[in-house]
Length: 247
Image (cartoon, rainbow, N blue to C red):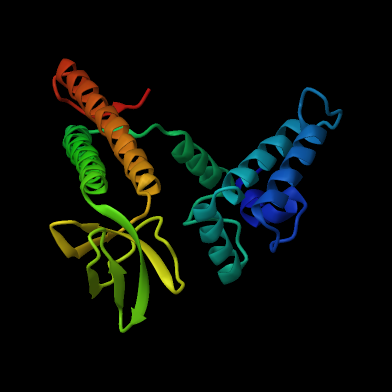
C-alpha cells in the first residue's frame, strides 16, 4: 500500500471496530480479521497487504501507550501518523519495543546485587524478630498465671490472684488474636508483680504472618543476588562493553 494511503488509513477501520472499544474487543477483532485475511487461507489477491496492515494496526492499538499517542494525534488532525511516522512504522516500533529484551548495564546488575543483599538481610532480621517474639510469648505464658479479669471501666481490669489478693490494673493492649469485647477478659499476670498483665491469647496468627514475610524476603533476596552476579560476570566476559540482554 502506498505511503500516502497508509497515512490516511484509520487504524480502527482496519480492525473494524469503534474507537471507544476496550482492549479485549480490539484483540477479539484482530483475531477474527486475522483468520479471514491470513495469506495462507485467504483467496483475496491483496490479502498479504491487508494482513500486514491489520498486524500494524493491532501493534499500535494493543499497546496502551502507543494507542494514547495515536488517539491524541487522530483527534488533532485526523491523520493516522503517530509522532510523524506512518502507521506501519509506528506499529513496527511498538512491536519491536514490546519484544525488545531488558538491557542489563553494569549499574543495573549492581543494583540487583546490592538490593538482593539488603532484602536478604531484611529477611534474616524479620526471621530473628519472629523467633524472638515467639520465644518471649512462650516464656511469658509459662511464667504468668492465667485468670479471667473483670472490666471495671476507665480502661482498668480487676481480678483475684491465686493467693487471694484483689488486683486492679490497666487492661493490656490486645494484639493479634485477642479476646474481643465484653464484661470480662482473659489475661495472664506475673505472680511476682500482679499488676504486670498480658492478654491470654494465641499469637499463632501473628507468627505465621511474620514467618511468611520472612520466607518471601529470604527467597527473593538471594534470587536478585544471583541474578546480579551472573549479569556482572557476563559483562566482565564481554569486557564491560555495551549492554547485556536478558536472553
